Length: 286
Ligand code: PAF
Image (cartoon, rainbow, N blue to C red):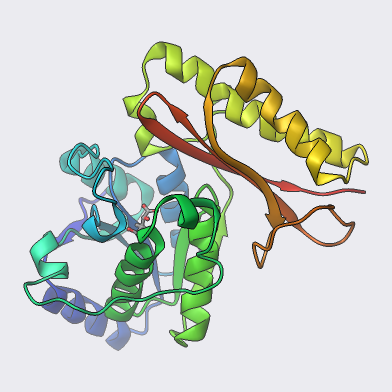
């Protein structure tokens, strides 16, 4: 393993990118907020399969946190993250300061109109504007051939696909499956907040989603009945549900029926104490 080179400024990124182009190498980018887990590392490994060089970014983006959210306590471990990036094949890691990304007087934001609506976009006003802005800045700076994101943040992935297409950024956006713990819990940097008791109750999210998936595969197409099935484990575990909805997998339009041949997605958000977790799964009827 080689220790990745740490870049701190946009100029350093531009020099790195130009040098790469001169050598005719393909670049994969993996943007993250750090506190890396196996989900992030799977993105870097896949980037290495698809491209010659992998760059990761570690930046806890203040623009995507609401005033009462967990920006100040978001978990951080830069030293550990750099080691993990090196082991997963990233040769460069961009770790800018907030004042570098958003210097005084900063005033330009990116808004993705449709897929940002509802779900997390409805519950966290401004969240996707912050995500879209920082991701657009990173894609414009690195000009990667491929950028990789986890399907765990499924609405975010659709937002990023839309902005890359609409702004003609010339990058392939790749979504990779959610990585789960052995018991089904979706890996998330925020899992570290959970007490042992809340960690056990959090399993009700994936339990509900997998019950819905099995029912859909068994022929249940009615969304109201599927949602009732998905909610049962959450109610039993006394988890506060933020939303549990079935949407078209591409447009994120709400569905009342799951139709054969048209990909659907169930998305859930719920609170375990002060910690908000999200998860989602593909639904298909035969
Ligand atoms: O998914 C994340 O970690 C963040 O939302 C992202 C895409 C790195 C933008 O800050």
